[in-house]
Image (cartoon, rainbow, N blue to C red):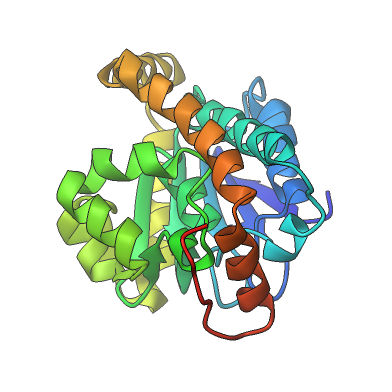
Length: 257
């Protein structure tokens, strides 16, 4: 694979996302995540997956340049639906997936992290969904997963302000399980992954299946509505201005059209 690599230690697959400079989630990266899940789903040597980012970030967002190659709202909705399905596959994966988040998990990067079963963060990491800054909305189920972890009011604040929260705050609000000094993060994540890998794979799989029942039918309705809205917003003048402003490194001027 071009962007993903992994090693197996003590039944733990340590997966590294490596797409410099910021591990942006281009469609190729998401497809490789899907292929990886297929590769290890029936591999008995893998009982737990530990996902981390190479370099300065876990993942600093989607590949905005890739958006400029999409011409219609329907294509954009299809992009959202494809990503949603792969992230849902991750969340319902029969083996535990732990995200070790350092640096930043923003936009699509946070949506990827939120689809993992457990999130461990560095205290100084930045986590957020800044899509509205570009005149867009999250498209990989971020609008539906974030309120499940932090509550409606905090999710509304994070979405509407585009301001990220720190890793320490993420643990306080329930978005992350624990926050650690960055130099301790991976060791702590590996320790937890190894502990879980010693348990019965049969029982672990059953426990993960039971946890999925906390998601009501309205969650899936919301995910579908998000994909549709993703495409509708994309064809607005404001979205074109937001994307252009981001690529030109200037403040956008939105007109509500």
